[in-house]
Length: 283
Image 1 (tube, helix red, strand yellow):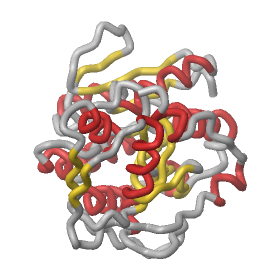
Image 2: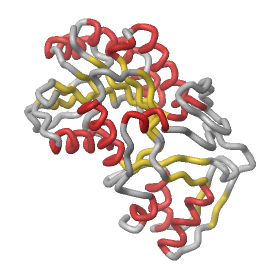
Image 3: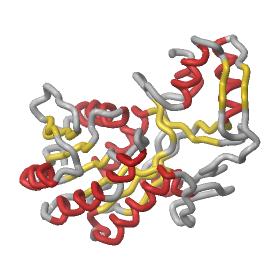
Image 4: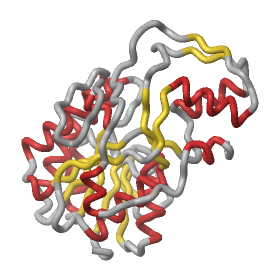
């Protein structure tokens, strides 16, 4: 498998960069990236998944494995919706025309919506534009690709170095300015967190030892989970400050209180090297 030709679409993002490092560490020799931005790397392909010219270029490479990291939260949200619809249709075309190619789709646990518990067999009930887009992307892939060519990882909230957006970036920015926090919910929002390096290690372990005979859907969530208020309290404790917190009376969206990752742990167990507390002590 180490000589397989692997493509990371959206490979210059937060998780993509961690995947590049993890694949290189495990001696994968033919790892390519693709994104809209240019790169000095000889293994980078610049292009837009919405562009049919890129579809033809990527098909000609005849990749063995494509990992789709596109379709994350963007502004405007229309770009996110397009990548999870038209972009997915184009990706399906690439897979169909690449005889030996498999796809790993990076999705989100947000597709479960609000619930007391979710596993891979739970009903999907997405409540935000982003999680709805990811849900529709999953449905397209499942309906149009053979099951033996598709793996979907539903990933919880990612964090890591050089992270410019998300709750950690927001807390850090507020700590360095007015120390005022504004949230559009009542603070009961629960999120599960996994560091990008740990998530990348799980994906690469799956590629190394399981992708030949294991397909389907897997939750990847990490071991840390906090409500918004718990996360703020932890940040205040570590940074020795006190925020002024403005909360809304509204209940949060996509609020899954417990999520199981037992399915992937039946294949192999993993212990994340990073946790939220140690990460907050470094930023």
